[in-house]
Length: 440
Image 1 (tube, one colour):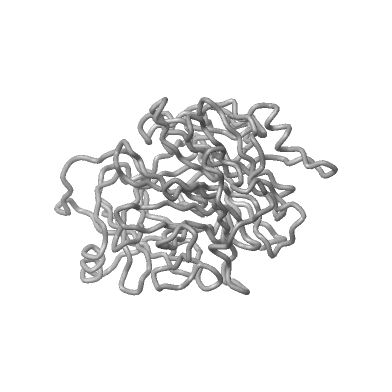
Image 2 (cartoon, helix red, strand yellow; image 1 turned 30 degrees about the vertical axis):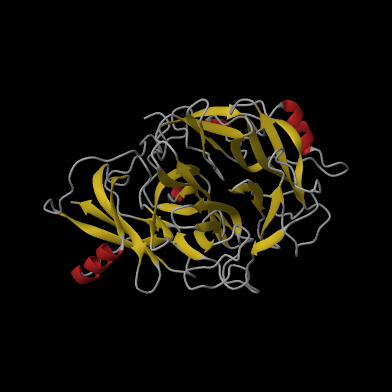
């Protein structure tokens, strides 16, 4: 069970996905392992005792993970925290790591304070995926800018043949892209103040706040670049959305052809949800815990696994149990405290990505049959409603239509602890949906 997502188990030593936030994922061809780097999280009672330094988790199979500690050197931490006359940065955010030019390059964020648009994205390099990573320089810097411009956080890197681009930004001026020097990983023109160009920005008076946590992947078989991003409040109503483009620099559009710059938030793929659960994968030491679905999937990264020749999407998600809910009277909103890393299979349907309803737990064998007693459960993700979506039952005709229109696949039923079959797709109105067969 080491490292498999398990709720109500608060020890990262044997529940390694615990505490992961803003996770990325890479396959390392040298050590032949997978590594997921994330935002600094200080949870000493859970074994996460490093306040700052970029935590990492490793895996040999994308199913079982091990918490490895932090990877930035002490010198890099001191550099990254230094804000001159201003207070030091408390922690680092949203790292992205890739293996290139026989080195490991990490892009991570240091902000003036939570909610500030004055931030920097550092590049640090190492000879091993577990570090130590030493700073090479700043690649994007938004100190001294106002809130109409982008925030230099949430870095992601995308390659277009031999050219390398940084995708970044959060709320404020939107998501930007700027070219990097492919040899060094630093800004192409040597100017960290050159912000690049906007590829996604919220509408005036947006119905849901965002975007942030952006990432881009190119799918050669389809000839499209896909821009993923999140809208909503990360503590509860976070979601995952997508747009696509024939060019890495955009324009990116949703399924209706609307541009992600001030016209559309993107096609919604996932939000808070709850399937029925007879035996969710959870410890029972704390009797106050009770299954109540998952909240706020978001800040995700698409990932192509060259070992399995399959696409995945990794993101963080929150335990929706009442035990972990905090209500902020000032902001008038809930926040669910406990978060985990979740990896999903990602499929493409009519040129658009869809996610499996269930966490990835390896290949599922055996035949599926509806002869065993049970029923289908369904969830639809409405575009402007980011509240919790609970599974419902549909008529046989509606079920048949959604099964025919979607991508059917075998998976492990996390909520009911057995193999099953699921379907992901878009309905006739363009809404993403998930279906899962639940045995009685």
